[in-house]
Image (cartoon, rainbow, N blue to C red; front, side, top):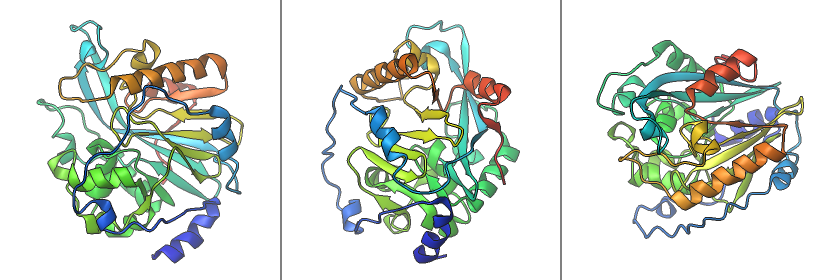
Length: 313
């Protein structure tokens, strides 16, 4: 399907896209300096997110589904600084799916078993049946959003045997595209500039309305290309998908950093995000904060019906 056909199909969701003119050269075939500026002030405006969630006409999403393709088990003090090193915390490797009356949007794409095995030094749980469902959901989706370049979020697309069929509906920011090409997170997710150029490439300042009820916004800190997602459902419920700002809600609630030696993050930016998220949770009772890797939240929200268990195929 070409982009013209894709735009016709995506109109079922009420999606409006802009395709900026990004040449292969602009994707950094010649590597330049990182000109990203870092600030400890996180100034995202929730009222502005709400307004932007209305700018694209169409039916609002009705549901958010979730599945996990793997688990990672780490000492608690690695996940959250200052916690008990003798306790273990399970981190789920999740994929979210937003359901519309006429289609679906995938939030990240999971990872295959080979990529999963590049994380950690021991064999950890992997759920191949769930990943098969992820692959089927990616194939069926109207749009796939990659929130940042890390392999557990991007490998489902990059390593797909159907990548050429998926590429036209994969949404990435320019900074994510640069990192995918020049700094692959794992050896399994190396990808060429020519292949990335088939994706929907966007360059934006802070906010980007994606579809009715959905706004992506920049949240650098975990990585320089990290983003969060605001979601408003037809029943009025609101969600902030914080992605990997914290590996656990305990990072956010206690405003404590991750403590993994292999992770390089911007502490000031993340602490500012934690303060913003905590302030939202205290003042905006209708907003639920999602955390990609929090296994306790994953189980709790499925049990309570806040998130759908498994993906719609």
